[in-house]
Length: 185
Image (cartoon, rainbow, N blue to C red; front, side):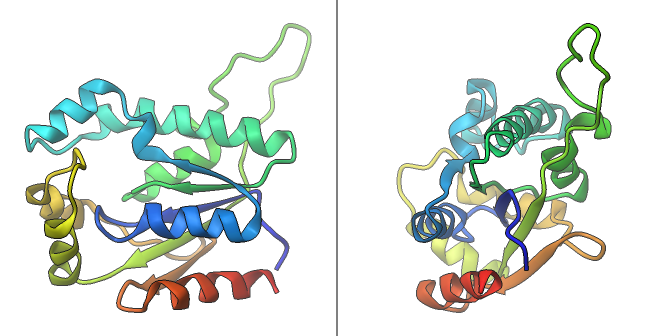
């Protein structure tokens, strides 16, 4: 398989996105971004109060992430992004920007073109019980365990024609990384 411009490591909170994503980036020599670092303060406060984010909260955040991916990939930098990306429309925004259209205005005199990121989605999947147990052990994260059910409720696992692989979080970390790296061999 030809290497995509970016890997999206997705799943519900507590699935291991940040851990898997940072290790993958290190193994591949790619740049790593944790989408949680780009949430506006209002989103963090809302989640901290136990209020799930809605589309209006997420779309500007996802558009910003799309712009970051597009900028890096355009310069030849491969990227690993850890991001929940629970719904297909959210993954579409990461690939194409809001409504499938470029987010930045075209320069005067230049034709506007669709700005798309070639993305491979790595879906870390697991049961509510396993992931809930992980979340209860996690300290210092703004996302409370009480919101996990809302993430499972919102989750639309990737499906064809999306470019994706699904990996169970029941595997150990080295097995998960090895499975993903096999794609590049």
